[in-house]
Image (cartoon, rainbow, N blue to C red):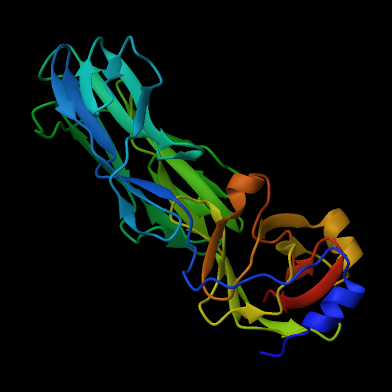
Length: 308
């Protein structure tokens, strides 16, 4: 990789060379060990989660648990869940700005009540536009015994992407991530997420304006529907203080800085994983055509990858 420290000092007043670090950055995450818990009023169950740091390494760290409805279910600092009253609540755990997916808790009065509804797709979590799939639903009581013959109501939360009829047939409508829930006797299921159509765009970096950039990148939808941007471990570029990754519809530095989406500053080559949805939840996989390496202080593009 060719470097230009002298040129950077003369031309880029705000861009000063930085040291490189080899550890790949994949982003913090909290992973739950289950999607649902069902309880009788007054009973308790343990919820568990694992924290992974920005390098993807598991860490033993204090997690902060919370309940969306403490009149239904409470949770202590150790993740012990107690049923307080009939109904449903979502539990989450967090560290700083990192939060887990919700854990659905259903609390019932009687052992024979509907306590858990699970909806799934027999073809997995990806379909094409126009494809139809008949969903599967399992209904259980708090003892884990199946309950048959009850009416199921289906709801599509993103009808412009994924529709569903009351026979449980889901249809892909447009590119993106669609969610469906099933409800039985007032008890909601887990949220089923299905990716529809194009779910990944890739590109290869090229240098610009006399600077070097190389390696691969991918913009993709994760299993939970979040839009993610990955720089592969072969990514490298000329670096300066204030080198940022952007999504843009232009390779121009000024247009990118003013109209693009700033992702994060980078100071070394190698693998990175960015959650674009956490930066701007309105961005879709089709909104931008380039991944840009930008020296932000000088508004100069060091490199770009066109997304295909």
